[in-house]
Length: 453
Image (tube, rainbow, N blue to C red; front, side, top):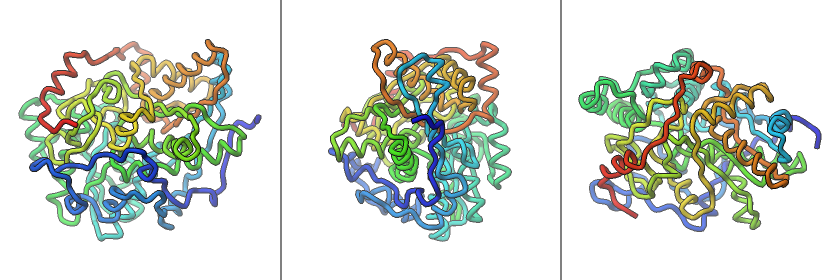
């Protein structure tokens, strides 16, 4: 195979989302009511999500039909290209073959619209007028603002204060698409005011922003809450990525030995990896799937598997996940959106069962990999994607050391054209290495009084 880019036609956009729950040998434990520690049913989620999404959240059906209207909007940027990274391979002097699925071609510049469009659709179907959400680096807030504009709905976004200050043009994107954006923690909610009373200089966290967004949604008429990662239905929507990639790899006459994607809450990783893990379940293949997270927020590699809240204040049900503790506030580094304290329930169960792997990286290592990729492939990756690239570099070098040719596929989940302040900091030497100490992790986890597993 000598082609650089493997393309699909509009007719090859997936017609269904793949639900890995149907194939998992061990299904995740149920969410719990934090007041009683008893499993909750779908009705408990009704105040914050439309029923169409709740049904997907608890579904064990293997395939879920993609509505025609959603699929038609997908056609604006899907199918996304699969590209052979010849230049990157040469620079690494590796026998490995490296491919990447490029999701930066979406209007928002990332993979996030795959679920944003779907979530806006189901909310619109049930008469919702406004969606409230949080965002870390701004990719999710941008995507949901775009989706709401397409369905003539309001969008309100609580953006982690650190990113709000570092990434003003992400805020501008949301404004262009009609989104209203607040720096979180804010004085607009009881949750925000509580955090600011404890720490007036809080840089914010996704857990805090989630608390603010849920509170706002619950107290706003005809409004619902939306999450851009972590939850089962969100991971489900992203499987269009891996389904396309599987077909493209087949057209290339190749198949990955290793799947790699950056990891924040799980949607990026799940979107690419889950359709390939399906082959492991059904055909007994041995495709490795590696989730790449920052060393400053290492829930998969150094967290604990137990029940925890999805937000800081404790407004969500208790979820079985790998976590650093819902009170954890990540260091103010440029890890992009990969700064959430917990991991998605499905991904957590897969890791616990040793069906996937996890790896953490320091930010200088990540940016070094991202710059090399940009110089050889032309695309400037988003800081989040650089975490995946750091793992790609490690695996490619291992192939060279062992003299083995393996096929590596990674998810280039977005471009970094709006994240140049992070690259400026890298080149000026202002990015500092940061790794959580064992004492810091133990201190955060010691505050948990949630059920153990």
